[in-house]
Structures are given as C-alpha cells and as structure tokens.
Length: 395
Ligand SMILES: Cc1ncc(COP(=O)(O)O)c(C=O)c1O
Image (cartoon, rainbow, N blue to C red):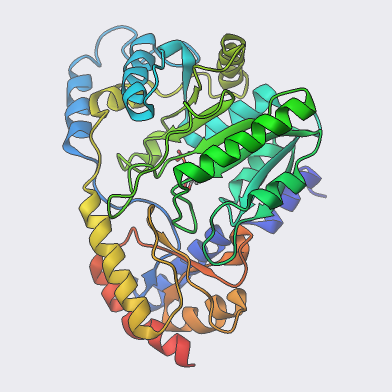
C-alpha cells in the first residue's frame, strides 16, 4: 500500500529528465571517475559569488549575536530590503517601482508558486511557449490551474503569437515568458514583447478579466554580444516580473528572489497583500533573512559574466567542429542543438552517454528533436568533451 497521493506518485514516476540525467551522472562518475565524465546536465552555476556576497555575509556576522538578527521578517520581506530592490529595479525597468509593488520570496520558483496561489481559480489556464522550463507545469498544477503550451517558431524559437492567440480561452489567466530562455538561450526582442502585450490587452478585454504576463527572468544578467533584454513592467499593465539572485550572484542555495508588479497595474495593493499571505500559508513564512541581507549588499554586482562568454565560444567551437546544427544562444548558459537523427532520447542515451557526455533530451522541455547542454562547467570539461561529441555523431 502506498502512503502517498496518486498525484505525487505520478510526479515521482514522471520524474524530470534533468534529474534523471543528474542521477545517471552520479552513477557514471562512480564507475569511471569524476574527471572522465563531461556533465552538461545541470544548470547549477559553478562560478563563485561576487566579492560583495562574502562581504555582506561578514558584515552580517558582526551583528548575528543581536536579538532578532535572525528573526522572522514580514512575509513579503523586510521594508529596507524591498525598498532597496525597488530602487534597483526602477533603474533596470525604466519605470518607478516602489517597495510596496514587490514581494521577496524563496527564489523565482517560490515567486511563481505564490503568484499562482494568489490569482488562480480552479481550472484557470496558464500558457507558455515550448520548449519551456519544465517546472512551470508543476507550479501551476500545485494551485489548481491547468498548464498548456504553444509552440515557439521553428528553429529560431521566437514567440509564435498566432499560436498563442489561437490557444487563449476564457479560462486563460496568465502567460509565462522566459527570456533569456532556458533551454534555448533565446532573448525576445522589444518588438515581440510589445506585440505580445498588445495581443494580451485585446484578449483581456474580450475575456472581461486581465490576463497576466509573467516574465520569468533569472538569466537576465547573462546576455551576450551586447544583446538587450526588454523590460516588461512598463510595457503592459498586468506585467509581472519574477526573478531571483540564484544565477547572477551564484546563490541558488540561499533561495532569494522576488515578484514585482507593474506600477501601471490597477488593484495591485490587494495582489501584493495576497502574495504576502501566500508566502505565509505555503509555509515559506518569509524569504530567508540572510538572503535578504546578501541581496541588499550585492545589488548591482554579479558574477564574472566574461567566464560564461568564453565558455559559450568554446562550446560553439566544439559543436561546430563536430558538425552539430545549433543556434548560438543570445543569453543564459544553455545550448539547444538539434539531435542528429531527430530522436533526442535515443541520441542522448545511446550515443552521447556511452561517450560519457551528459545532456538533457529536449523532450524533457517539450522540445523533442533537440538536446540541452548547460555550460556552467569549466572550459576544461568543454574541451574534454570534443572527441565524445564527434564520436557520438559518427556512431
Ligand atoms: C527558467 C527558470 N525559471 C525559474 C528557475 C527557478 O530558479 P530559482 O528558484 O532558483 O530562482 C530556474 C532555475 O533553474 C529557471 O531555469
């Protein structure tokens, strides 16, 4: 007799391809040794946090003996932390954002969960573009919503707005975009996001209730060759920015992120109050106090992005040299090449893995026919994978 719910059983059995490859990697490393395996499966940033983080931690330690220094904070984060993030985001987004227009949460993951907990009625639909960050489906279903996807444009992975328009129904409550994108590395242009906003304005009017545009942007800091990530908050009244410091400060274990609402959104005070309650009743209670301090100490700084830029160039060279078809990622730390032969599961498991090269099948992101490589690994690992990629293609 199982002790767990049917839904959780399904979740465990379905698993995630990222996790499966991670587990396979552990096995292979045990069998062949750490250095023999080239593991591109996990987006766990390996760069050290910037010096500002260590300094923030030392400064905090000075006061750690004081009462309440590690105490509960307000559910949406401390006022000083919200205000400092608001000042930072006002510059980034090009529109004035106040501390009361945002809440801090336990990473972007919790940000999405508290948002859905706050706005979804049972059966409400949330849409995103394939391929997509696979946890979105779980986050929506956690709160009684229905998650559906529409394709992005073939090969370029830009937004297919016709497909989106055709998929919107009376039940549609939110659209999630992720730019720079995991897994494709695509950055949507300002024109695309404006066109999306116009489409959502029209659809919201027709539906008689707003459709939120959620921009999930943990990779915003990593845009290559001078590419610009458009700021969504000034572009649409019901725009919602969800992000975190997991990637730009290499702080994923400290769980600090946020949800910020467009200052053009009418009725946002009630939504902010709901987000705070959701933080509380989902059991997060408040964003971590250490994370709030580190965020405030490190705002405006980031990891050395030039390291990622060098790895991107090297990874492109390795793939090109071996003869793979791929689009150069404009941002984030992922490549999403075509799987030779078209069957990504077969290619990843039967061709790449025997060469001790670990990737994640595109199927795991709703993007079959491709595979994802996370280049948050050293240049040494990338260089070492060169022969493996060649042999996998030839075999
Ligand atoms: C696209 C995307 N969104 C959200 C997250 C969640 O990140 P976190 O909760 O650490 O901020 C991730 C993590 O990899 C991601 O890739």
